[in-house]
Image: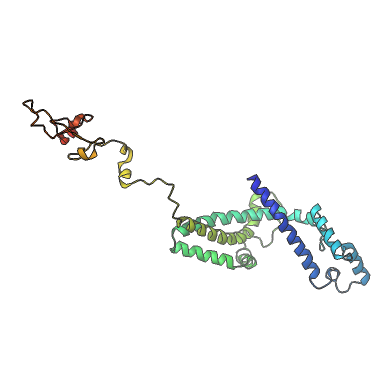
Length: 289
C-alpha cells in the first residue's frame, strides 16, 4: 500500500508541474495589464510602475517563471491582491470549514447513494431503478449554485429554518450543524447523484459477470434436502445391491440343502457383504440391517 501511494505521488509531480506551467502561461497571454486591474484606470504611471516592480512583472519572462517555480517549491504562494495578506494564511483560515463541509457532503452522498445504487441494480428496470436514474440525472444536471439558491429561498428565506449566511465560531454542536446543514445538503445531493450512478454501474457489472459463481461450491438438490444427514450411508434397496456393489460379484456354486451344488448354482457371492450371504436376498439383507 505504501509503495502504491508513493508511486501515485511521484506520478502527480509531472502533472502538478504541467498545471503550474499552464497557469503561468495563460496569465501572461491574457490581454490586459494586471496593474490596471489592481489599481484601476485612474492610477498614475508611477504607481503602476511601482506595482509592476513589486510584483516582478518588469523582469524577463524566463526569470519570472523561475521565480514563480521557486516560490511554489518553498510553499510561498505570494500575497493576495485583495486582502494584501499571505495567501497561505487566507487558505489556512478557511481550510477547517472546507474540510468539515466536504466530509459532511461525503457522508450524505454515501449514506443515500450507495444503498440507492445497490437496490436500483438489483431491481433493474423497476420503479426504484427509474427513481435512481431520475435522481442521478437531476443531481448531475443542476449546477451547485442553482440548487444552493433554491435551497436558500425555500428553507432560509421562506421557512427560516436555517441561516442565510453563517459565520458560527462557537463550540455549540447544534449551532454548527444548523449552519452546516444547507451547504452540506446542497453538495450532498450532487454527491448522491454521482455515487448512485457509479454504484449502480458497478453492481450491474458484478451481477452480469458469468464467473462470479465459479469459486462457490454448488450443492445439488439432493444435498440441500439431506441437511445434516447428507453424510449418512444409505443401504441399497431391493434389486440395487448388484448395481451398487463396490467390488465385482463373483459367481461361485453354493451348497444346497443336500450338500450338492445344484440349489445354489449361479448365486452371487459377496465375501465382504454379510447381508448378501447365500440364502438371503438383497431385500432381506437390507431388512436385517
